[in-house]
Length: 238
Image 1 (cartoon, one colour):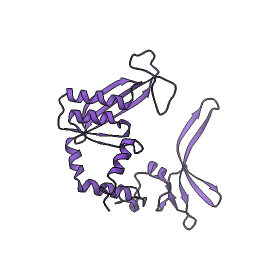
Image 2: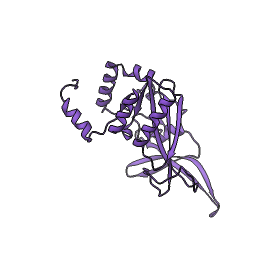
Image 3: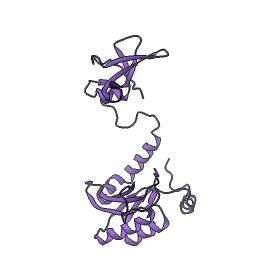
């Protein structure tokens, strides 16, 4: 992606080259040289860092590679920009922030909530008890293991870790984790969970322990769609 400001073409002797494609001169930066033992030649490694400007041959329109390799250069045009994307489609972000402000969710989540998430990994270590075949996004045909972490959203300190067999999915493991949290003596807390943990059984289990929660729902589930339709026109804020 090319940025919306101009910079001077770097003065890197012997490392800047140009390649013309169509009507555009692309600026390339040589960031490394790799010696090939087979051919006994040194091969340069180059990336494009910008597009040369016709009106001023000393300047170019940079891309993100320029910021990567020349991050010490003074680029006043980008100072003070928002940390958010410059994309104009920020409607959803504004609505979510408004809701969080009105319900003071930032204060609530920062003081009393635990963020919990898990992931899984392929394993090539051989016959290990915890390693089993399961469901993995990037399936390499290998057995996997799962591990998870729960941490305090206020200070980001890990509260406890979990490891469990690869055949156990996130929905099932959550109920085991809730029992563990209760066993550790955690009370008056809530959990922040993504949609991978959503199920009616998990909701009932959290209610049983007296834990509050924020969870992303799966809109096509009968449970969710029926609740939305039942309360339609009662929770929208214009």
